[in-house]
Image 1 (cartoon, rainbow, N blue to C red):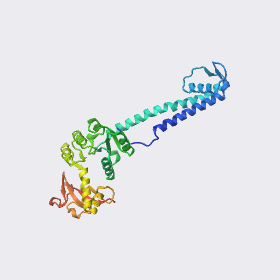
Image 2 (cartoon, helix red, strand yellow):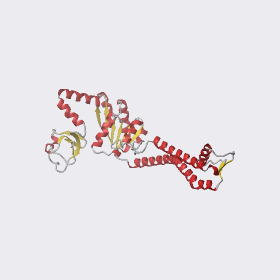
Image 3 (cartoon, one colour):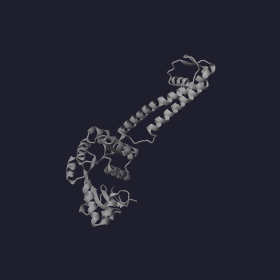
Image 4 (cartoon, rainbow, N blue to C red):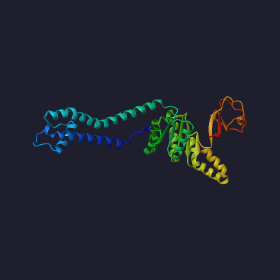
Length: 329
């Protein structure tokens, strides 16, 4: 599972900068030892050269300390106490700190994951983050759904990392497998969007999702009309056929470009006119749908959707919900 990404420098850049800093400490220590080379004793005999100074700095900072080169003068020993020892500590912090930070980040990530799993409820699971899945997420966000209430499931890690960079929780895995959907906390979800690339995958995903969650609203997309009944039998509440819907829009646009433009506007959330579902207000209860400020096209009563022209929808009830067309502004 991938939680929403937090901005930080790339890992390669972080490691590279720390290695450069460690190298700078090593070079500085080498220079300090070389400048005070007369205060050191080399058991192999002869004076200390720059290579000897670099060797001493390396074994000293790494705390190896072979003892073949040692400070014997008071000045060299004082330099070791006041300068080289702090540099040794800094050197170790730089190298060990990278490992500690990785472990800390993993612990923090695991804590965030456990906290998310214990608190997530009534969220939306979007299975498949292709064109259809991304459009569904954009519409949900436009209608006020929070990013932390959306979980994206996709088999491609790059796709999930992209979703994570946009503030969404992502799960990498095959959505036809139960363990993948459990990692997405699907049993506690309120809404499930099934939008994989293949129709047979959509059927299997819908079957698995409905077995794990009997109460959630499942909306699925298929390419071919002939597969829509299979999805409904698998447990989908709403099935959207992408190819035939696009074909009908093309035909409508050919016969009436203006009507096609209006339909395209309605399908594009956030621009021009939008189709939304909202509750009936107290002021609207007991009145006709035609008297409402918004253009009412249907009334939702219980689990039934009633066309506004039907006699049953002539009087609105406070418990009803309405499908209306309103300005996106």
